[in-house]
Amino acid sequence: MSKPHLELSAIGMEFPTQTGSFCALDNVNLKIAQGEFISLIGHSGCGKSTVLNIVAGLYQASTGAALLDNREVNEPGPERAVVFQNHSLLPWLTAYQNVELAVNQVFTRTMSKTEKKDWIEHNLALVHMTHAVHKRPGELSGGMKQRVGIARALAMQPQVLLMDEPFGALDALTRAHLQDSLMEIQAQLGNTVIMITHDVDEAVLLSDRIVMMTNGPAATVGEILNVDLERPRSRLALADDPIYNRYRSEVLRFLYEKQKKVADITEAKLATVTTKSKRDVA
Amino acid sequence: MTSQAKLNTFSRLKVPLPTLNLAFALALFLPMLGISLFLLLWSATAPRIDTSLGAFPGPGQVFDQAKTLIAEHQQERAKEVGFYQRQSDRNAARLVTDPGYDAKVRPYTGKPTFIDQIGTSLVTVIAGFVLASAIAIPLGIFMGLSQRLNQSLNPIVQILKPVSPLAWLPLVTMVVSAVYVSDDPYFQKSFITSLITVSLCSLWPTLLNTAVGVANIEPDLLNVSKVLRLSTWTHIRKIVLPASIPMMFTGLRLSMGTAWMVLIAAEMLAQNPGLGKFVWDEFQNGSSNSLARIIVAVLTIGFVGYCLDRIMLLIQHRVNWDKNSQVR
Image 1 (cartoon, rainbow over the protein chains, first blue to last red):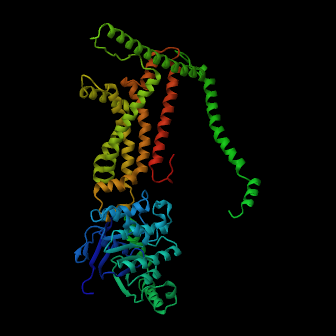
Image 2 (cartoon, rainbow over the protein chains, first blue to last red):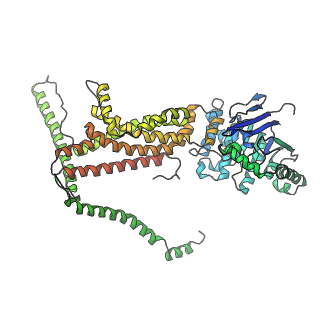
Image 3 (cartoon, rainbow over the protein chains, first blue to last red):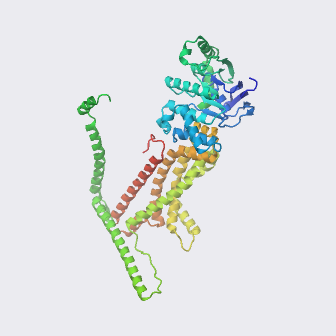
């Protein structure tokens, strides 16, 4: 990896609180190649979302920076599309219109009207939502909403796709469906993906590398696990695969032995972050 | 349902239909009962209250006066038609004898009837409400968007909000007389005065609710807007406006209610033709029918206010994307 596509360089993040500043991240370093699928995993409150928000440009790192193709990221933009945990579709627009908003914004001049229409429909087809194009989010199930959220992000043709626990709010079956869809799409498009997850199976199944984060405060990258499993991956075949299970237990060991959550740390931290919104520490 | 027959037998045996009918009957019967009790109580107490204008009118007298008011309106209309008829006849006759005659059409100047007054009041309240909304919605959006603007304007808003229309009226009257000077005014001064008073008093609920609605847009939706790099104008149009519509309409409905209440008071004092002036005139008139006529006006004011609220509710229901939200 001589020239990383996306580089997190010595990122630190401090949030001001009433009792002084709270150091959420300290010296986070990571190099990501083009087309790589990275999972960020760690306990709640370890700053995974903060990392993602810095890459998205929604937060400014206190120290260090995120570099995309050697250029510093300092504002949000469609080349780093975000799939939010709770879909965040605009409830007054249909699935089509939600994607359209993104397409109109990103391809204002580069696409004709019919090209835009085809592109919107293509992206909705990619996430298997052709049947409900003209429904509003209120009429869609949780999984379908998240599909549209992914279609909206993909339609921006991002260089990096950032996913903040995209399947966290879904039931297990729907989640499995969407994971399969995501693998399919990624195989097809070859996007660079950073995904936050709490789910060990999800991390091993989808990722090329799993970045395990230490507990906060001053969280940083603990270990990085290379997942060397051949693609396309099938969850059924892998269920009994010894290598797969070894990866799985390695992540589990990191989370539950090395980074076991200590109760008093949690409480102390909770006390310092109560003034902040939940998203800051998620 | 897999078995239609089964469903039918069941539905014949213990259908919720009787209970449904009962609920329907109750929904019809209870309001009637309430109204009847009210009328009964009214007719029982009214004759016992002796005023300087005779006994307080009961429902019967009020009903009679309502009929009289409508009859007066029809008479007035007939007179007006007659007036224009006579005028055009006269002009035509004169033109025959004197072809060079420049025929003038003079407007009818009869006194406005009760129905005319309702019309005037409606026009005034709607104009005042539209003016108030035109100020309150944009200002509310900007106050919601900018914490700083909100901080700077909030004290003024909070202090001006509880001011009674009666306190505004003298000021507005003086300012309108001083500023609105024209030889051939398109609007009457009294109309402008009531309109401004109505706006001043009714814009606050819309302003505050819009500001709160805009300030409380889900942070995720704002992040979507940031990621898409929407321009400020697109951001307002595509995200802020639709997201704050439910709160905005809550404010608009409150404003409409306030506007109607304020209008009656303003008309009384500003002598703007309208229901308020009607009430005031009847009060000054002091005939034996005055009280009954005032009660007709009171009931009309209430009914029109109710209708205005229903219309707002209807529009709210149309415009609101969140069909599940509780709208009352």
